[in-house]
Length: 158
Image (cartoon, rainbow, N blue to C red; front, side, top):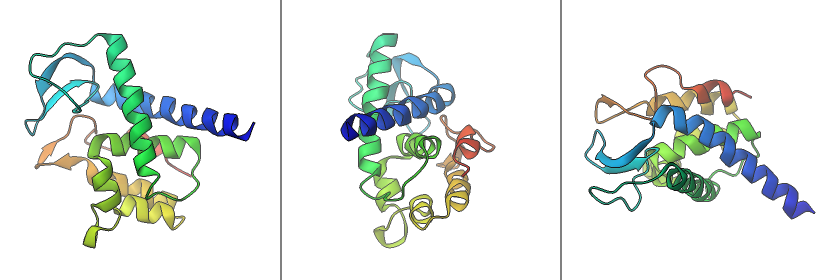
């Protein structure tokens, strides 16, 4: 029964993360190039996208949930802190946007990013504040993150 409970917890995290990601990313059924020129489709998905590719809403939903599940698993390799569902969902949405490499190895000396280090140290408020440092990339506003505090800032609060 414990595995079922754990599985239900993961499902809740993924569903909550999708609720954060979808409004900010926006859904595009036809492939396009994002602000840094990367081919993107659906809800900001950059994995296995071909020029001219078209997806259905059902395909986009499947891609999003599969990606969030994978990104959570990768994040959990460096994020060892026990987190409330809403907090972990906010972190998964962040990793969806920046990539698990940036989360787990993007800090000084290849260490985890400050978001992860602070969470692992038990400083959830500091970790959530550190999310705001990721609102810009290539000196431009990033689709997927607002210019002010993202909804994850409230969701991630302890």
